[in-house]
Length: 385
Image (tube, rainbow, N blue to C red; front, side, top):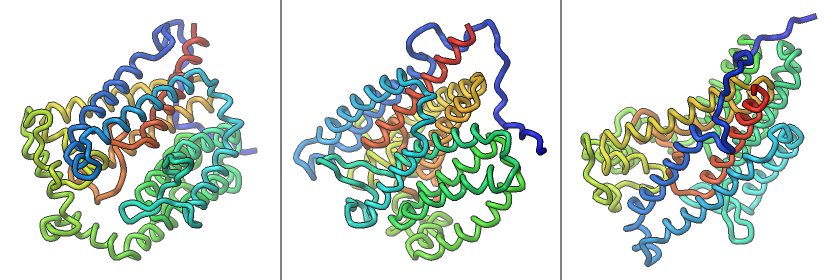
């Protein structure tokens, strides 16, 4: 009989010392999140006021909506904090099926188009992005499935194939939208969680060898993706086309210097830098607050990621450990990719910066994910007392 695989997540032994403060909320996790949300409110207004005034006749248009999103997100955080995390196991399969149906609905004519892509659903006047839901649904499913099958993860048909099939089921409609950024994140998330759960490296290596040519084909099958890749290698060669965003983003960082030009004094947001309040809000932070503002932003994200990994390591329950690890990994991937794009280190992708960028679906779901992390951490602390 095959031996049980060793999970990559090493949970620390029980200790009489508490892992989190004896408060209803983990302040080491809550503080940087609320700080980022507050910074995001200021920066959304700063980055969008001119655009909002031109398009909607009010410079506060995006700020008001972001404030509403933040309020809903705070309620989602509180609700998730008090929702027992083990109950997510029962919702793992229904959540994946529901998200798959939503992704199909986007493709069959119910989707809302913006920026040349159809990625949103509009229900009762509210617009949301199913791919954001897919990230949490897939994380819950993988945490449940990997923990449930922990004794048989070395078996190809048990520990590997079912997870790849579910991943493919979500990736196909995303590719057709197209939403290549979410495809990359979900693929990386699945591989990292399977590795952390204990799936053999030979299976993951085989998957990477199969997916690599598929990824290359998708990259070269669309002309706009080829142009984006070429502009990434030399953005100044395509300064008036695909390299336009990268060049103006770099100009924003360069203009910021050490301390920045000052709040509200960004020039690149004035119809030079596309989507300054969503995909490139990090660039506006760099211009208005300089290197110090960028460093503070990175430090706050580092605190969140550090705390999420600490919760995963301290959780005795394998499902809770994998769930907290997966939620933290998904957040870290989105942060790294968005910042990489803004700094010209990665090809341009339409991904928001968690807690900072304008966008209701992203803000609400990321704050809900933080609530889930708090619930896992609190349960762990109570068991260690």
